[in-house]
Amino acid sequence: MQGPSAVMSINWNRFCEIINSHQTFLLSSHVRPDCDALGSELGMAGILTSLGKQVTIVNGDAVPPNLAFIDPEQCILQLGEDIQPADLVDFEVMMVLDTSSWAQLGPMGDILRSAGGIKMVLDHHVGEDDLGAELFKNTTAEATGRLVVEAGGELGVPLTAKIAVPLFAAQATDTGWYRFQSTTGDALRIAAQLVDAGAVPQDLYASLYEQETLGRLRLRGIILAKTTTELDGLLAYTYVEQRDFDQAGALQSDTEDVINQLLAVSGVKVAVILVEQKTGGFKISFRSRCKVDCSRVAAHFGGGGHKAAAGAFVEGSLHQAQNKVLNEVRKAVLLDSTLSPCNDMPH
Image (tube, rainbow, N blue to C red; front, side):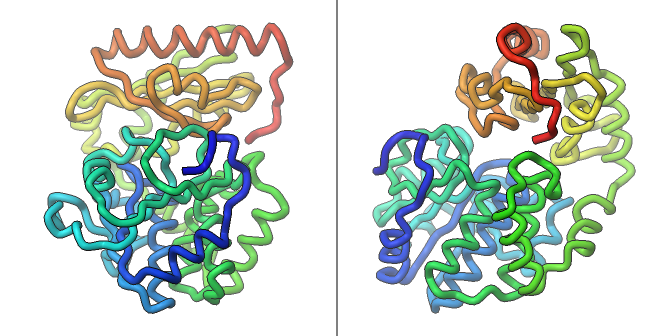
């Protein structure tokens, strides 16, 4: 194991040593997978396959329908549906991408605990649990997809369209299509490599943002209609209940990116959305465009993420969850607005 969450560089020599000396790999990521999770898995699978390795990708949750385009060959399997735990015992290496949290692994956490081979994590998030794995982490990277590109370079694998397309989707979505503060010159140089290798930005943008369903559109209207602001407009929050999904004819994954519309309101510095889960409790998403550290707020509830974007899960009714979460957010916003001016630049 490497040290605390302040890890800023990756021991690529050790990473390559593990890859080169093993043949069978199991890749996984977090529940409710986003483009960075899925794209990183597919990109890494492409790199490993190019090296002649045997690769299987298994997640605790299915690929959301709106992101199915990223996996046209349906390589990503769902535990318990497409493959059973008993089938996952003979891999030499299990690699977790885009999370360092037990809670976010869901049912794949049990697979990681029982894995007998080498365990490794490739991630860019700030917080972490002790997963009993070798940690390959750079918290300054804008996306785990970017780390996969670097891994391919260290392993001497040329970028192909099959590798580049999911990795461009991973990086583009985690940078808000290159408009967040995490978009550096290096990030754009990585993007250029991926485009040169065959990623077509306009096609990916159309697949991501121009394939709305009527249910998704209706759900967005319901969520936005519930938006409330506080603290002189610095804080905006909203929520979605299971009955809202039924009313709109929408899916759980249709809440993706709605929170960014709250943050787009003039004067809003921090945004929060509570999403009721089918099994009870609420998934919480936090966004900030000031010095409020979302990862610190999320940590109060066992969650984590980045300074500008983080998530957590809270048990209880809507009233209970909302009170717990908003009390912590209010403290953070008031402290920030008292001690230091907010930064108006988007992140």
